[in-house]
Length: 148
Length: 415
Picture 1: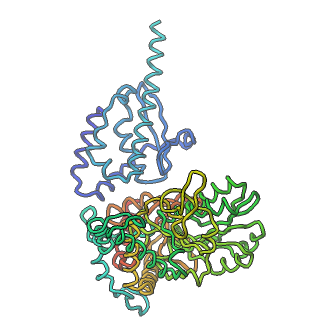
Picture 2 (picture 1 turned 180 degrees about the horizontal axis):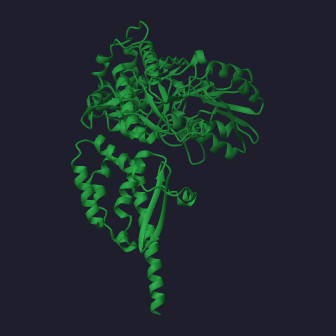
Picture 3 (picture 1 turned 90 degrees about the vertical axis):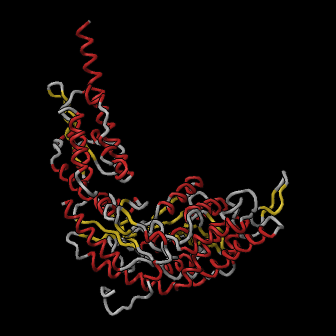
């Protein structure tokens, strides 16, 4: 599925839920499906700054695609990371970099999360895009190297 | 009210009181608001809102300046509020009441003026292990500036000050003791009478942070014999941006002004300015006139309901909440002092306080999560923060039932 398709599917899933308790139930459930970060990567370097709860994020490039693993000490946060991972993981750095993440607004996350949580979510997105940007820059410089 | 433990009859007509607070009628996410974040700020009764509006619609004018009718009316209302507050605290004179922006502002004022005139290098300021950041940082800044030292009265795991260690910390270098009357993060009521008695035996003045005390219990500055006492208007049903500093006249006379400007001067020349008398010496610039007046109204409202009735009702609420909360599986209280007031802090199992707070919010229940501006307390307990429910005169037993049900629902979702 493309990033756009996953987003559209999430928007449609969320629209079926009537109240925010149901939506949280779903977010928490997603948290349980989050591909967990290997304990050895739970280092201070991998902590996302700007989150009130602890969040660790690790990135690996496999067959040209970025794979994210993560964890958090807060369950709802874990669910939110899982949302982001389900949308962005297993795509090329370029796709991730260029992705317009309209689903966050569309499912009402920015307006319904507490401000600290919503800032944390934005920090998370920023961090994921930064990794993608770094990998993209790296692969481009390698390609340029080959051409020379 | 059949839930009330023992045989207690509700100490006040809470339903009647609730009708005076328009915001309590609000719905949050479609459910009636359960407001249990009163230690952060209380809601305002209609009379306080009316006082604010009346000032601006009927007699908005600057105080202490004009000869005209409106200015006189505004000055009278402003000074009457000072009298109301003086009598609420049982101060000797209204001149001992200084209007500030709030608790933080009052502590900064004393830290600055007292520090500048009294504190010498090597002196010590004592604070307690359970202070709000506002009663730590101003002293830290002043101590750094004056080459003095900040020392801490330790507490035990229940959240009670270790009084033996307090006594042992007292010596001739200690020049100020600044402690909280009631802890905002743990609810502990500190033995302030004993602290003041021991301090005065060594001629050390005491500042009490009464931000979490004056709305819950009678506070008599003469009976306490406290030197300085501060609180915020917005935590005692008044507006934000206004607060009170009480200081003994002999102290306030001695201390230099905090800020310079209008109202605080007697005469100004480029060569030398002489300062106004108390309380104006410490009220530079046009004050928060409407806020001061409405704070007086808030205190009159409390007096009408009866502070003793409020205190009794809130004790019933604390007892009921403690009993109901401890029935929740895995719940542990943070702060189990023998004497507590106003607030209960807790954690449930290993649920992150932010997760719990967020799911309570979505059920229309407003509580506070986090470190409550008391990071040293959280470090001491080895936790990232707590969930805190705090009460006011309009809190009901039903609010507490909804909190308990809300926690159970959230805990089931999160585990």
